[in-house]
Length: 302
Image (cartoon, rainbow, N blue to C red):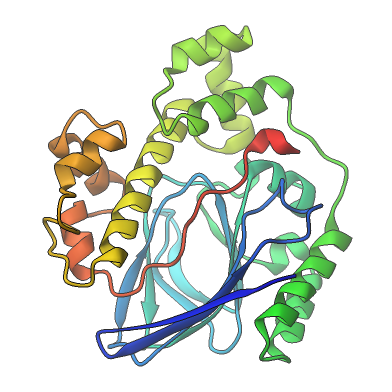
């Protein structure tokens, strides 16, 4: 396994980490392992963005604190390791200028294969990782904390996740619907997707929610939002002197909106307010160190 390391400084803080692809047998079920160590930043909060992937975070040192959870009925809390399903709401992640751990992004098929449950079982709740992995969650955290080498930590993840794999699948029609709705960055129409897989729109909606915990329309919204978030983060990172209105020369918020399938900048801003709790211009101005939320593998690869 080759772990790619990186470090950069921002606002007096230093962000260090590494990224590596999991074992080939795991790649249909999750994206790259992302290790992070963020230190020296002013205390504050950053936003955990909604995504088309389930989130797993395993901390190395102090627990992760969520003062505001994704689920309106769930109060905040602290976790050594957590998992969450799909949601159309953001959460707030508190920090004291320091965070250290590993983040994973699971496909819905990964929830079936590694957790043994459909994504809908997690809903938009944040749960302790031990609720889905049992005692292996504590073992995973302890073994990763015992070494300072990212490549060894990622190898530990490989070994434990491979041992957890079980035989599971998702109905072909649902897998195809998910791929069409999210693979098109939200451009596919729900009615057209239902027609392609041979189901009525109402039947698709019911079966889709039972498996994924969100509606087909929300899956498309998340995919489009995720695309805009990724582009904004990329162009902002490439230009340290960016302004909130123009992440880099030649790239405006209006251009990002057009490139990611929104009607216009105002449409993108409305969606961001609903899904992230603030418009993209404010996120660019306020976010100090966003978690990496890159795309996960195509669900059909499994």
